[in-house]
Length: 132
Image 1 (spheres, rainbow, N blue to C red):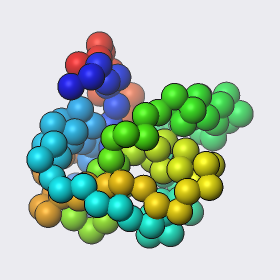
Image 2 (tube, one colour):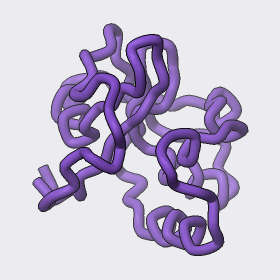
Image 3 (cartoon, helix red, strand yellow):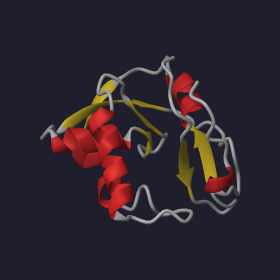
Image 4 (cartoon, rainbow, N blue to C red):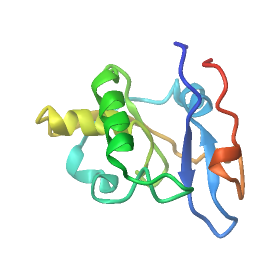
């Protein structure tokens, strides 16, 4: 696996904020079949995907940081969807596809979602150490 910065997929739940280590999601999804999906199927394009948790605000600086990640992302990797079709990894690639005028993107999808790495967590307290 390439060196990937520590990052997490977050989701609100009745158990508190759940977090999945994206590096683990990538490892777990390695053998899943890849398919093409339409960008119009990705609900997160019209939702607060990055700022709904923690203290992060959509400031100009944080938006520019996301734009830099969008520009730098590699489209050869499929996005990762949960069992219901929600994005667990790859929103920067989804945004890049949208910016490029694409209508589709490659994806893999879990048949059964893996258990989260953290339950009822504080995003700022998670380990964001070296890339793996």
